[in-house]
Image (cartoon, rainbow, N blue to C red; front, side):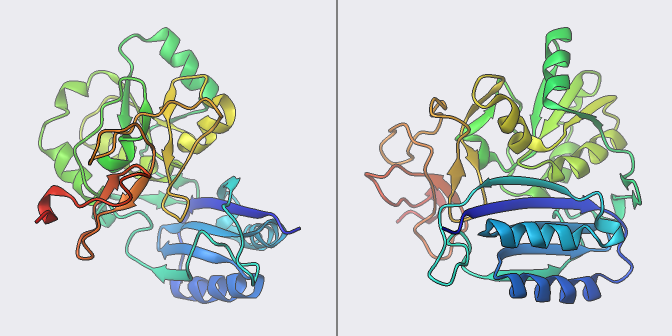
Length: 295
C-alpha cells in the first residue's frame, strides 16, 4: 500500500536563474505525481510537498544533485492520505512560483545570502543545545517567529509572541521598539521548520539584538527529538490540509474555540469568503467568523 508523507524543505543559496529552476522543479514534481507549494527566488528554494513516500524520496534525491541544493534542509511528517490517483490529499494542486523572497518578510534587500546560506543570522541550536542553554541561562527568551494565530494552539513555554498577522509585519514590529528591552538578553527564535528564523534572526541582529539564536530545524525537528516531553506544549499549525499536527498522544491542548471556548487544536478559515483570518474552532461549532467580518 502506498504510504502518504509530507516533505518540508528549504535551502538558502544563490540561484543565477530561478525561472529555469522553476521549470525543472515543476516538470520533476508532475512526473512524480507530487502536489504542494514551492517558492523560488535568487536566494534559494522553500517548499512543502505531499505524496507517496517513494516518489518523495526520488524527488529529494534528484533535487539535491543540483549544486546549490546539496545542503537542502528536509523534514518528514505523516500525510493524511492519498487520492485515487496516488496524489496527496493534503494539497489540492501543485504550485511552483518565482518570488522576490522565499519567505515573505518584505525585506529582500536586507537579506544577504552566499553559498553557505544566510549571512549574519543567529547561532544555530540543536534541540539538545537548546535544552543545555535553557538550563544555563535563566534569562533566556523564546521569540516566536510565526504568525500570532499559529501560537494559539502551540508554543514554547513563556514565549514572546509578537502581535503579527503575517510575516511581513515583523519588520515593523521590530522597528517599533516594542522588543528593544530584549536586545541585551539571549533570544532564541523559533518557527515551524526553521526557515522564517533564518531571516528573522538576521533582521534582529542587524537591529542591535546582541545574542540571537535560531532553533535549527524549527519546531518540527524539536518535536522529532523531544515530542511533548520538553519545552514545547500543544499542537503545531501546518499550512496544508491537515491544519495541525501533534508529536505524541499526550500533547497539551492550548487552543480555545472562538465561539464556545472549548479546548481544541482545530484551526479553520474565517467563514467569510473575503477573509483570510485563521481561527480556532472546535468540531461542534464547525465554523466561525472573525470580529472584523461578523454581522
